Length: 279
Image 1 (tube, rainbow, N blue to C red):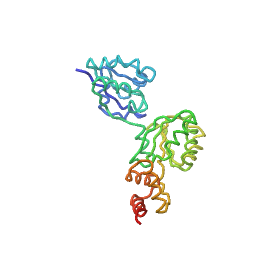
Image 2: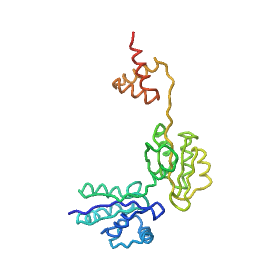
Image 3: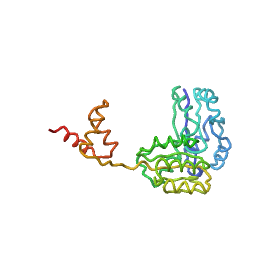
Image 4: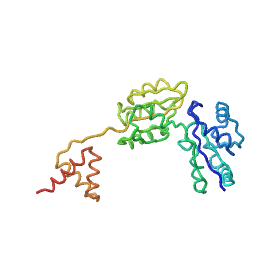
């Protein structure tokens, strides 16, 4: 029988956030694939866990080289525990390649859920969390960052990004230039750690603060685009729907497109179309 791959949620900063299940898997796993062996030993000491499994480094530069050996171990029936430095593996951390390869090989993949910087930052940001999107690490170059923010300018969901502390001020300035200086955001620094700090405000205000210098792990949460209601007359609404239909979509889809673009109630758009067709 094949083994199983277990994705372990490592603490963001506080070892006490780890539950008994992760302790048990750490102690019994046949192979521990870890991003950093030093962090593994430190975590094991903090948790008072003694492990007997074989340790394999698994970080970005060796992922592909390690896959055959780990897959072979799994095929032989081993339990492989994958741990990254913090949070859940494969979420902007090493792990996706192994998860995908294991699934393709018919090997069971499960998890011991744990802390996530994404959901932790969302929860404390004070911004809407009913719908959100995670965009990972921001591009390093300003032009690429601005292009990304431009593509997300109309995104209604709350957005979560990872960013390095030395690029944070420039990233916030780019976001303010594209999304608006007053767009609400929260910079979550060193989550769960001794010097945790949550700074909330408009993007421009946060950029000024960050320019003074910021240290630590950063998760940036930005509010989605506000609802925009465009003032149009009945004939203008009907003309907008007609233009969508002329482009080749059905009337139903044309009405939906105008509702999305203008923020007008669907009934208002529908009534305008009906009125335009009435002699």
